[in-house]
Amino acid sequence: MPPKKVFLDRLDYVIIQELHRNARVAASEIARKAHANERTIRKRIERLVSDGVIRLTAILDPAAFGYHTTADIFLETDPNQEQSILQRLRAMPEVTYIALGQESTEISIEARFKDNEALREFLGRTLPSIPGVNVSRYAIVPRILRNIDEWMPSEEDFSE
View (cartoon, rainbow, N blue to C red):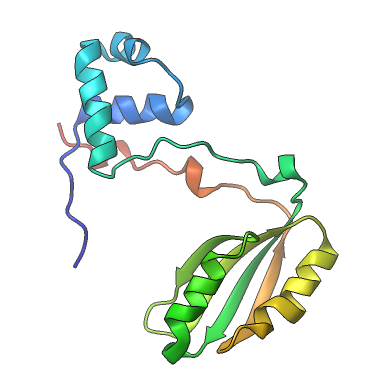
């Protein structure tokens, strides 16, 4: 079942845009830019969080911690072991993204490493040691041009 669509309007759009630019922006500043009451802005932010529209969190830069090598890795998996495989992948600090293929046994992951040797170890030993996992292909990512934390819906997604 698809998630419920939350009603969002132009004020929500302005709030989300401002928080996206700077998550530490004061509600009073957003209120000034949106020509709205500060209390209204605070209540809207609370609603956006409680409805699951936004999460207020710190986004880490892997390079600041020495993780300079990124790889997209595609795994063929045994469907009978999917849950245990996903549990193991979620527990791996190298893995930054996990996605299931549509009606397939493929799992796509993104992983970060301090160097190519760590990537080699991960591909050659760590992943193959998981029962039901086979590395089908991978690509070293020399540069990420847009991360998920940069995504914004279009203005048309907000009703008037």
